[in-house]
Structure formats: structure tokens, C-alpha cells
Length: 395
Image (cartoon, rainbow, N blue to C red; front, top):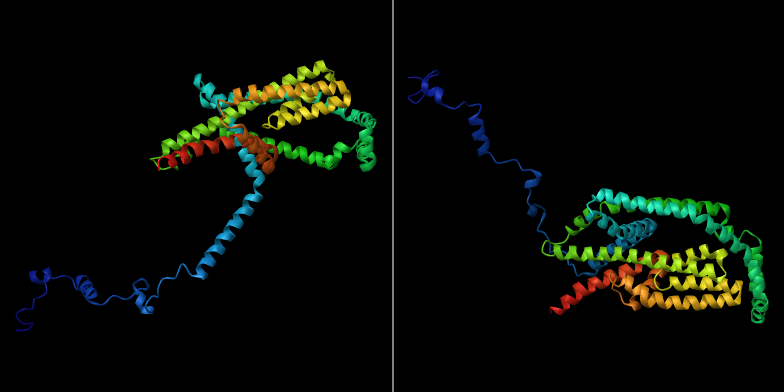
């Protein structure tokens, strides 16, 4: 019997039930063979036993990490310094957006959508600036030109004073000033000539355009930006963070509105006073200077008063004395009556802190730093009072 008893003939039912040798048999043989090693299957001990972890307290590790951190900090410092002017424009734009936000909120409460409220506020600001440029700037320009022409005459009057003559003989200050002013080109030379004035004007217009665009963007998306920043806080503290953040923004808005009221009051009061005191020829220009400097906390009003009083003394001694008495009295009214009532509800900052903050801000960023100093100090005091002090009270 060929093939044995267990052999199956081709074509029989039993033979047909067996698996095909070219599929399952090959797969079974492949499973019984050892797998081919791949690079990922190589065990670490194939290259030797791993050593002990690197000692993190070793001088080499500490020096390397410290040097790498110092280089990174220096690189970030250089990067921030190189874009310092851009960051300043962003900060000013945020400051203005927070200052204009109360007007937008006021219109929103009257039923106007936020987009239309932002548009109305921006158009109002542009209209006020356009009115100022077209109506006030030509008057100020003429009066500044008149002041410039009268400087040599005032210097001549100062030379008649015996004390001033002795000082001039020792230091030759007045003669140099008079010669410098008499050239007629001293204003241009202050800015580097005609080309310097042109570049300064172009730079100022460009910065003003950038601030306007950024302010418009920040003002329109202020709520979205605030909510996005608040989402970064943990959920358990998000409500408290949002309330503190809203309070800081409200403080900035209240400070901007209050500073505008105080400066406008100082400018209008100075305008009325100068029209009756005998300086009507320079009243608009000097009132504008007083209002502009009065925006600077604590020290701006004093600077404006010194300028007006000096011009008053140069014009007439009696006029100078009247200017000095008036501005001393007005300073007391502004510092102890007007300023506390206007700022008391929005920015709760002690007077000493305002002075220190204004001086520090002016030393760091000039006039912009002085303007940002008071709301920044208010924000820091709020965080210290509501976070640090309360945390210490719970211990």
C-alpha cells in the first residue's frame, strides 16, 4: 500500500481540509524561529552597565548650568533692550486703551454695541485732536515765535541787575546765551538742524500712527484679551485674579480721566489769569504749556508755574510777583482740594508714594515713565494689600 494508512489521496475530503502549505505552514515556521534583532531591541547591557547618575551638586554641573543661565539672561536683556522703543509704544497704547475704556463702557451701558462704542470714542478723540491742531497750534506757533524774538530784550533787562552783572562777569553766561539766541538758528540747532527737525517730525508722526493703531486694537479687543489672560490662572483662583485685574484696569482708566480733568482745569485757569495779568500776548501758549506739564504728577504743575513766573519777571517785576503769588495759591488748591477729590475715588495712593513713583518713573522713562508711575504704583499697592498682606494675616 503506497503512501501508508495515514496518507490522504489528493482530491479526497480530508486532504482538502488541510491548511495550504504556502500560507499557514510558513506562518507557523516563522513563529518558531527566533526574531531578527532590531536596533530598538538592543538592551543597554549590551554596551556595558550604565554608570551612576551625574552628580548635580558637582562644581562642573553647577558652573555649566549657571553659565548657560547667565548667557540666556544676557541674551534676553539685549533682546529687550533692542526692542525697548517698541515695548514703550505698546505700553503707552495699553495705557491709553485702559484710559479710554471707561468712555466705551459708558456708551455700552446706554445700549450701544462695543464695536460702535469704540468707533464713537476714537472719532471723538480724533475730532478733538483735529480741532486742537487747526485752531490752537497756529496761535501757539505765533506766540512761541514772539517769545523767541523777545528773549534778547529780556536778557538785556537781566544784565541791568548788579548781581546778575557780577555773575556774568565771572561766568559770561548771559553773553553766550544772547549770542546763541541772536543767531536765529538756535531752535533748529537744538534738533540737529533742518534735517534733524524733519527726521524728528517723521519719527513722531510714525510713532503717533503706531500708537493710534495699537490703541484702537487694544481698545476693541480689551475684554477678549483680559479673559484670555485670566484663563492662564488656576480655576480655583481665576475669579480672584479677574477681580484684581479689572480693578487695576479701572484704576488706570480713572487716573487718565482724572489727570485730564486736573490738567484741563490748570490750563483754563492759567489762560484766564494770563489774559488779565498783562501776558495776553503769550496767554494761549503758556496756558498750553501749563496744561501739558500738569499731566506729570506732583512736579509738572511746579515746572509750568516756574516757566510762567520766569517770563512774567522778564516782562515786568510786578507781573512776575503776581504770577508767583497766583501759582503758589493755585498749587495749594490743586494739591489739597482738586487732586485728592478727582483722584481719590480711582487711585488710592498716598502722596509720598506718588512723589517717589513720579520721580522714579521720570528717571527711568522720562515723561512717559512719570505718567505711568502713579497707576503702576496703585496696582502694586493693590496687589500687596489684597494678596501679600492677606496671606500674611492667615499665617
